Length: 463
Image (cartoon, rainbow, N blue to C red; front, side, top):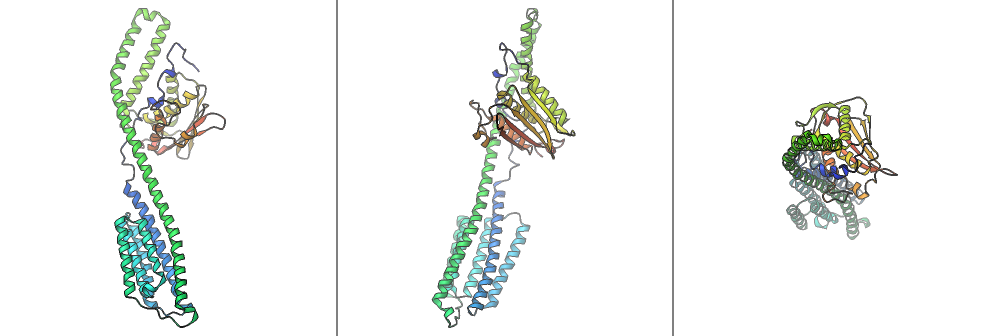
């Protein structure tokens, strides 16, 4: 490794790439790629409608079993034809609901309310045909109300409460009384107690099963919305940093140009040119200045563009080889070990954003492990996999848990930790993933998985 002497500025005196990479060029910051909140609600409503359809199938089977037991075992006369017609109507409703769900992408609160009201109406008719309010299965009204309270908004829930209360009142005034035979098995009190027990057990079981599943759907929706809000906050953060970087790049252009002119004049002065040590220092200063100008130019060229003027056709091998050579030369570092195990070469687009992402991870590794950094390129299916390893202290457990979140840094600098945050966001825009893990003894590995389809010509951040 060729290190600079202590009399010259070295990499320790420059900002780390966490701070240098203030904005990922080429990242499109609009939120059009994220599903709107309504789509998340609709997905949850579809799941909940499917649960109501399942519950209706259970109601169909339960009603057939109950009617059969009461009619055949207890010998109680029931109006089988009208009750069978209600069951047939529930079956037809379920078939129609499934067909409707298949044809319509959106399910709203209104559709859920209608489904629950139809279930209440079917239960009311069955109770009317089998004793009205004296039937112990009137407790099943509470199941519908509870489901409504969990699934619907407040106004719809109260509408359902009003319907169930009105149905119960109507069942106390108008119903078809049961003709109970005179035998020990049909004692009115005993039948009522048994019916209340069965109704209570049925209510309890169905509430636990379906409310638990509905709550799971709602938690999944809340988690999805929280992720969308986090993504939106990250995108806003990138927009603000991009504006800051663009403004800083414009402001730095003039002083960098002035410094370039001054250095060029100094190198032409005979007295300075005769001093070989000073001439060497001037040459190194000019190299560093050119690197600063290159960074500023890269920001200005590619900021706000997915594949702009800073992009050019290349291949995976050529891109990585040039990238490694540029990184070594810019940092005077020869301890980067590159292994290309990608296999057959593939045509891609050389993109400044992707190059800065890889530079960022390499710089982070070099900062904690100057004696050894390794880059391995592999192919896994249709993905390019880049593994960057070092022999530093590794990541703290809390950093691994919060990988990709802004201001998660072990360097103790105010505003640090933006590098990996931008790496994760750029790679995610490319459809890839970023993972990190610590080695058992010492060091860590950051793994970038990038789909070749988005790196190919015609792919990109908007793919």
